[in-house]
Every structure is written in C-alpha cells, then in structure tokens.
Amino acid sequence: MAGVTIEGVTKVYGSRESGIVAVSDLDIEISDGEFVVLVGPSGCGKSTTLRMVAGLETITEGTISIDGEIVNDSEPRDRDVAMVFQNYALYPHMTIRENIGFGLRYSSDLSKDDRIERVEDAAAMMGIEELLDDKPGQLSGGQRQRVALGRAIVREPQAFLFDEPLSNLDAKLRVKMRTEILQLQRELGVTSIYVTHDQAEAMTMGDRVAVLDGGELQQLAPPQEVYDHPVNRFVAGFIGSPSMDFMETTVEERNDRYVLVGRSNDTLSYALDRSVTERLELEGGTDLTLGVRPEDLDVIGDPADRDPRNSFEATVDVVEPMGSDNFLTLDVGESDSWTARVDSSFVPEEGSQVGVTFDESVLHLFAADGETLKSQGTTTESYHEAEPMTP
Ligand code: ADP
Image (cartoon, rainbow, N blue to C red; front, side, top):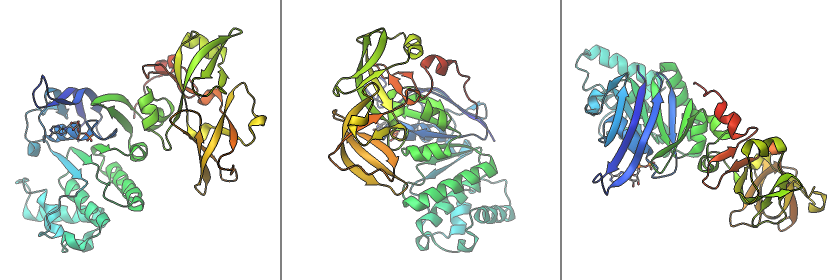
C-alpha cells in the first residue's frame, strides 16, 4: 500500500495560453491508508484530479506520486490503482464472476486457481457470493455497486479512486453503501480518494476533506475542523446542511465598542466582545459578512421580547416540520433568506415577526474578500496557531 502525493498540479484543457484551467496548482498529500474526499460544486476540478491520479488525463504541470514514485508518465494499468465509477461500467454479457475477474486480466503472475480464489474472496467480502453466476441485468443498483467494488478490491491495488460511486442510488441505499465502503476501506487499509459533490458524503466519509472551488484547493482538514473553522466564506457556505446563514454588516464604533450593523436589516446591532475586536484590530466603517449556522440560532416568538442589543427581527416565510425539529425560512431583509433549525414544538405562524439571536461564540466573521476572520469559538489568530490535525 502507498500514499498518494499531488504536488503543484495544474491541468489545462486545450492550449496552455487560452485553454480551460480545470485544476490549478493543487497540493494534496494523502497518507498510506488514509481516506480523503475531494468535494466541491460541479466543475470545480474533482474528477479531473482523480482522473490525473488514475492516469486517464495528462498532467499539464506538477507531479503525482504513488508510493513515492512519480507516475506522471506511467500508463493507467501500471499505476496499480482501482477506480470505481457511478455507472459501474459492468459488462452486461459477462457473469458477475467474469466481471469481477476482469480486473485481474493483466495479472499474469496469478495462476487460474489464485484468480478464482481472489474473485470468490472479493465476492464474499461484498456479500454477493450467491450472485456470481448471474448477469448484471439481473441485479439491483446496490448489488451492481457491490460488484463494481468487488472488481476493484480483487486487484488488491495500492489505492482506490472513487468517482461519485453512489450518485445513482436512492437515498437510503446511498447511506448504507457509504458505511459499507468505509468498513471495506478500514478493513483493507487501502489509501482512498473519493470524489463527491455531496457535502454530507464528504463529512461522513473522509478522514480529511479537500474542498475545491474553481480548480483551487480551499481547505484540506478533518471534516469537523472544516465545519467549525472554515477558512473562507465559500467553505463555510458549502459545508453544512442547511447551509450557513450570512448577513452583510458594517462595523460601527459606538461608545468605545464595535458594533455590527446590518446593511439591509437595520434592526441588527451586535456589539462584539472587546477581546474579539482587539484581536481582529477592527476599525469603524469596515464591511464584514456575519455567518451563523442554522442550529446555532435562537428564535424568539415575540420580537418584543428580544434584547435589542444583540439580535434582529425577521419574518417567518415558511415552517418546515422535519419531525425531530423544524426548519424556519426567515426573511431577513436581504435577497438570501435565512434558515433556522428550531425545536419541533416551536411552530410560529407563517408571516409573523420573530426575534433572532445567537451567541458570540458561534458567530463567524468574514472579510470582504471572503477570508475567515473569526470562526466558531475562535478568532483567526488562535485558529491559525492551532496545530494542524493529523488523521
Ligand atoms: P467536477 O468533477 O468537479 O465536476 P471536472 O473536473 O469534471 O469538474 O471539470 C473541471 C473543469 O474542466 C470544468 O470547467 C469542465 O468544464 C472542464 N473540463 C472537464 N473535462 C474537460 C474536457 N475533456 N475538455 C475540456 N474541458 C473539460
């Protein structure tokens, strides 16, 4: 087994001067046995990155190494990686046994008996032994996905590369297969790179998550760290569901305190703690984006009961009962509405006014260029001083 290192990798489709930059100067070091998820919106360069590791796409600049060996120029079959796709790519005319064994076609050093044994072991591992003589057409989506996984593990590769493998499955099966893939990866200890646009998949599966946007790496960290301490507004908004709520504010200096004032909601005035403003070296007149997660909001049924100092008013647009809790869509006076996640017993009337407040510890602040100045419970200073977590 082996680590995978992506170093200064750029991919330009078309000519270097005027082509499409799909991936830009990407650095990701994946340790031996680690599970790293590449996540980001459509077109951010996830698949291109994975395909470069697999050898299916040339590298414009930089190097990719597997187990310390630069593989830029080696053929896909010589890289000893196994790829699992969303469309399974099973051969319809072959049995499941033949489909799984197909991955061994280049292993000339295996005897026929070894091959049979490996296929049966892989099928047993995926719980599909009884399907070995069936054809793919007879199988359900979940079973076909297990065959595709069986075909990857039978090769005992140095690394697994997953390209949105679960996006064809229904929601319930997707969650089940997530767990199966994770268990399999833990059992085999094979270094894995997993591409998805689904942040929930990234959060639940990755030892570390690499968030990409516009071909550039935004953040590479364990899921909880990305959630609690996103490095910028993009990551803050992308990771988490429902996503973080944002409001545009301006800092005002009032009686020696710095207060955030809503730019399109004039009921917001939020006095920041001195320790925060000193560390951030805030100045009056600065524009900042405030961010709070929906579960961190306190919604006050009667706006007359709100403390006007650290809260604001909003209108309830929609109440969505989720069973365990309710999601409120709030009109906060900006084009983007807010979502609040509240107790299921709290059902305000649609169209009514409410008060909204939150603790300073859960408040995120972003500079005009999107960089995080303060994340949950920290300021940038303590955040950047924190030791990077190793998986
Ligand atoms: P993702 O997997 O995150 O959706 P991709 O890696 O597929 O993103 O694509 C990244 C960018 O590269 C996109 O702008 C996409 O349109 C472009 N791209 C991908 N494949 C090709 C190709 N074969 N030729 C030209 N442009 C491509």
